[in-house]
Length: 410
Image (cartoon, rainbow, N blue to C red; front, side, top):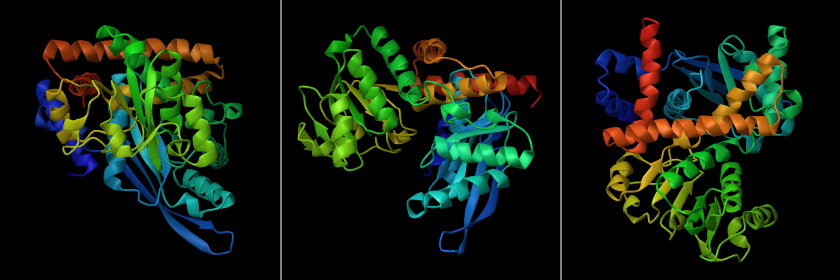
């Protein structure tokens, strides 16, 4: 089952619970547009190379399409369709007026110079200029893209269309209209959601041990924020390995170790473990913050955590969900847990349209109630209907999307 088939399976299960008919399910199961282009760049050695460029747009009933752009050599249309669909769900879960999108270029940026990457970014923006825009489709960074690449795309798009339009893309540098608080937004949103659940369960943060799989941006900021809130970080890992220490780990030391030695596992900070080991280590809260499909049928039964906070996209395979439910593990699903990122991207879009910019305090004061209110809606639905939090999140989102589609006569 590929990633898009998994999305459709989850969609159909949720749709049945709220009585959607086959026609509506079909509309929710396919993207509105799949845009595929070929772009050419001049390499530093004078040769010309072509790359496949793409954008998938999924359900704009609630607002413009929204989602990341990735530069990746193994871009898969099934993954991109699934991620675009999940963006539409995610935006609806947190109640922001946007649809779903995802796209990028099939290339390996590690084999390209900075000048060549700039050409790829500008070529993508030119090729997609008629299909994106502040009221149409708002891209953002994703795998192997960053604020500088968004800056190149903004500049090329504005040259192509002949007007200033900073809101056509988010995740930009602050100087070009980016939002304060964006770097930590995914983790910060997840922490707000986690704190809400911990409070519901009557647990004391100082009694809870946290394991973080993936010590990139989201993983580091989650560890930092939770450590500051009194949680004990007992494990962390990156692509090269991990470390476990029941006495606790300092997130800043882990970050410095990774920066200086290439991996959190290289600092003699505790017992060396693998990414797979981390998933089943002794902890109370497990945070998959890296890759998809990490919790599966073959390892879900060995998870010892009582709470899972999905900061990665799709870290739990569908066949693992019933196993985790049987073990009474609370899974805060990705479409809720990591929606802080797209929420602050929405804030950036709003600021760009107003040309009025907020402080970091402003951003956090607006992010916190959105994430907490969204959690409350999902949690209440899960309790009232005896559903998992993932099922409740999908039902909440689908109900909001379908309501708007019906109002539009779709």
